Length: 188
Image (cartoon, rainbow, N blue to C red; front, side):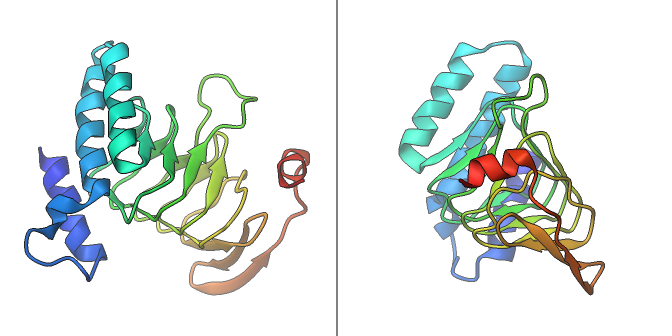
């Protein structure tokens, strides 16, 4: 219950368009409420009903969150359509995701297959993060940052295709690394 209250407060902190009780109309809020219930059932070892409810939620909201994903308090999805959060994804507290974001797997990993996102992270529209990578705290990932498949340290801003660190600890940075073979295959 405390997490849901924090999720509502996050809407007011992050969306200047919300007034009065309009937060009740946000699909991101609907999907996270359903997810929190589904995740509780998932942890009890009930696999079918949480998956069924997550698919029903996806139909109504356009947001797909696997019941196994771990999501901290103060989570906000703005607009929402096209957001996909995989089974082994972990998201810290006070994170903001915009629409059309994938926190997915590559299909080549077993066990932990999806990203781990730290706290106070903002991920812009169209960003794609794949594999069991770790994104640190206080990170900003720009809109349409495509194919982030490497760990990102705390206090960074990442943009581009493939994603590169352009700010680190408040200072300009240009940490461009050549794309991995996996990134090259996906970008083709």
